[in-house]
Figure 1 (cartoon, rainbow, N blue to C red):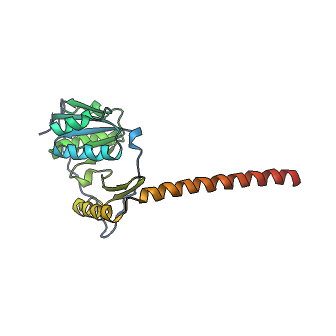
Figure 2 (spheres, rainbow, N blue to C red; figure 1 turned 120 degrees about the vertical axis):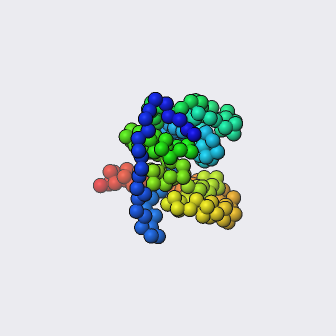
Length: 210
């Protein structure tokens, strides 16, 4: 059980939000996570999954891990990422200071609810493992082919379905897509340059004869 130091945990019962049938109202964004500071509370099996997801997408993200027990897998992964720091102790409220995102992966609903309340007061975005109603955002399944990245969400309803769709897309999308994207980027830059030059020439001509 995850412990919280020097605090009394209040009753944090919450009511799950009403979700319209067939409607996903989440707004999809892609964060520059390496410019933010993430707090991960918990370093067991679920904490490892969260850490792997964060680092797989943004390897240089600054992540502070706080947990009373840290698995060997988490330690090994952290050792290969200098931006990850581990403190083996109970959570403290001041751990939230200076963080923009908090990921809570503890096997205790009261503790996770308490940390969530503190984080929201600090206006920190929160993801709580296996508790969709407390989450501000979800860690979706990701398909990546070089520069192409596709995030899949089921609005927290079925991670299994999201993972299955990820597998299908990974198999269906060719790895050559990245070459296509890079070539199109070069063509776009070339066309943009030519267009800008034409605009400049037009303005000079207009000044001379206008």
